[in-house]
Length: 524
Ligand SMILES: Cc1cc2nc3c(=O)[nH]c(=O)nc-3n(C[C@H](O)[C@H](O)[C@H](O)COP(=O)(O)OP(=O)(O)OC[C@H]3O[C@@H](n4cnc5c(N)ncnc54)[C@H](O)[C@@H]3O)c2cc1C
Image 1: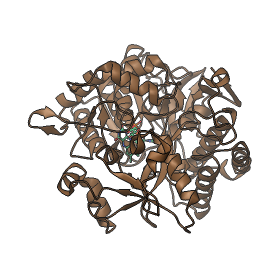
Image 2 (image 1 turned 135 degrees about the vertical axis):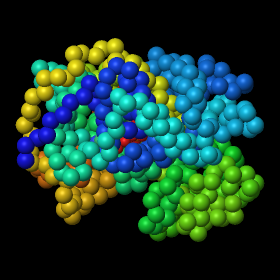
Image 3 (image 1 turned 45 degrees about the vertical axis):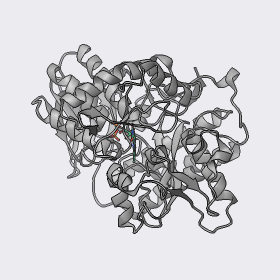
Image 4 (image 1 turned 120 degrees about the horizontal axis):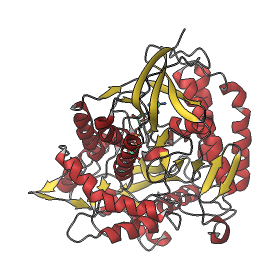
């Protein structure tokens, strides 16, 4: 089938917080096309519960937000990026409010929640625990008022097209399996995270790290891929998705208990349940391993907290757990950790430039170094806003002549979006189980080597992808391999990356960011 050609000035892959925010910034400069591979509401942004951090309360200071961000990053934050994040936060939030975002208030005053590793109450939330949904609603509504912006759903990006060292187009398939090449002056990857690499994840099904794998194939550098954050508390029930049980509940005073009903966190960290996420996740894994139960869990206990307040403050968590017959105000919630957030991604500067011309990245798909080795809770919606705005500004300033000489670019294969063959689902499950076991919360050199060997062997099966799911499987395999190789190269433990064979920091060798460039991994 011949490729259908189309063109735009700016092409944004991803309609979450980063993509939509960038689109709004770009609209005054030309036509902006935003692609989402499913509905716009199917993104991590839509699922974000707890909130968005900004030093806006009377007791807070930008310098304290910076200090907390740097401390969570365990020595590895890019201080310039972290400074940009916290300094530009208040203005970005005020802009969101002016576009209609309804954050929760007490009378007219904004209310601020507290989350792990924050030294102040600085988390804005909306409708209790539906912050991401509200931000996405407001951004999408704003984007719809701008005639230059078009948003296309169910349009799956396969690969970037590079000509003379510059990204000039993207190959996509639409929901009817139609093959298309879209030419643009500049392309922004805002494809979100890669939580679907793991058997247990809080991430939606779209989070297969497509943008990172596409950038890699186009020759762009990637960074910090070994740093995957595991959320300590996801609902653990057979046949139920790993629904996130927000950290904000622990901020309100909920406790973790093991199967003997003992509160265990104070034994692991002086901050108890409010210790950094990686510490809590590892403590839970340790408790699970020492339990003799066949299918062990730990529990989150809110039963001492005020029931009315919990229902009002966390309506979504309350109603979701009720669907599974758990009344969180009177019963314990069974939980386990789950893959949650990718600190690394496509290596960019502070304006979203990737290392290939014409290519930009923002949001969870990007690696600015802002989160270092571990992200501070509620800093990622903010990252999408701040760096989405910045990338949009830069693309606008650097606009080349509009893409008016559209050439046909032959498709790499005959693509279709047809029914999903069973083997691809088996392969994806295989990758997810392998990554969970060998490249998950607790890692070893030998486990990582096994993961790499197994993933390398999958290459032949995945090299002839034809439909969306097969392309996702190919991207998962690429990302899995690069995460495992980066984790093997980092012979130390830091932030979210923990190796039992190298349990300490090694600042002399590894107080640096990992950089993947083709087959090479270096530290700089
Ligand atoms: C359950 C959950 C709770 C969270 N809670 C919080 C919180 O309280 N506070 C906080 O700060 N952060 C939170 N996070 C993290 C935060 O939500 C994400 O990091 C952030 O929303 C990412 O935004 P994004 O714009 O980069 O990507 P997303 O919002 O994930 O958007 C990605 C977009 O890319 C599109 N896409 C992907 N691949 C392709 C492709 N091949 N072709 C076309 N389109 C594609 C998708 O369709 C989607 O539109 C949470 C995450 C989860 C999963």
